[in-house]
Length: 341
Image 1 (cartoon, helix red, strand yellow):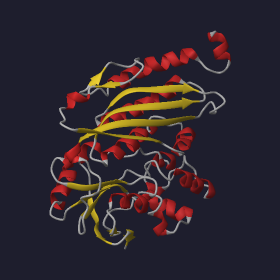
Image 2 (tube, rainbow, N blue to C red; image 1 turned 90 degrees about the horizontal axis):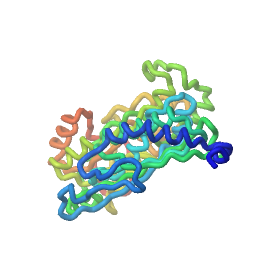
Image 3 (cartoon, rainbow, N blue to C red; image 1 turned 45 degrees about the vertical axis):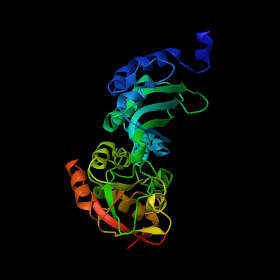
Image 4 (spheres, helix red, strand yellow; image 1 turned 180 degrees about the horizontal axis):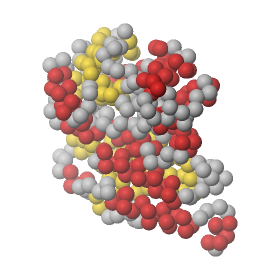
């Protein structure tokens, strides 16, 4: 029976090897509340171990998108797993939740155990950064659905927060200060446009462009998404945070208004933070109008925190103590949407 299955393009032995290879990566992510281990039909977590009085579960799921195409071309597979984790845990963090568990789904055209191990090693790295446990996942070999050297990855996370501490933007008020936390680069959004710019401008992913530093363009673009969990959770224990916006697809224009009550807008002051060179590079080579860049990319700001003016100094100090370089990038004003001046 196995011979017939393998004749269809599915390698059972490679599947067994993947499980063997990833066990150590999964084990490295264990945390308080974990139950069982890899191999069960479902990942388990003891919510009671957290000691919360009224826990609210906050879940998130996401993928890496067409950034994967660059990973295929560059032959770099150990960073996209971090991206998959980051996109999920940063979202639940925006509600004030601590990510607890993570599950991944990897679909491959051909099961190459070393490649799958690299992907899962990246997932485990992301989970350790976020302090959440990798409690399960699935690797599906799907010949005919994906080319032999291609794959897709998606993730799912569940976090928890005391109901009284849930962040939903309802506390955001006029004159609140907007603090921007730097991104590491393009993160995991806008890559269909990035790839079009690379193609149309005949850029070489393997070449070094001096304005981007000493790494090849492909490596710069594959820089993993920053995971904000630990510094922001630290911040939440020190000041009253009114709103948290994770700057993903849609940039400033789509994501910051998600935390603004009706009748309020965000006034952003350009020049109050460093716009990373990679965005200036993409803007130039793609001939993209400058204002439109803020509607597509994070422009060097991966997360925006809304606090009262009185709490801003303490919030900045906390984030700086975590090794970040936050900036006051604007404030909340009457109006609608996002203005950038």
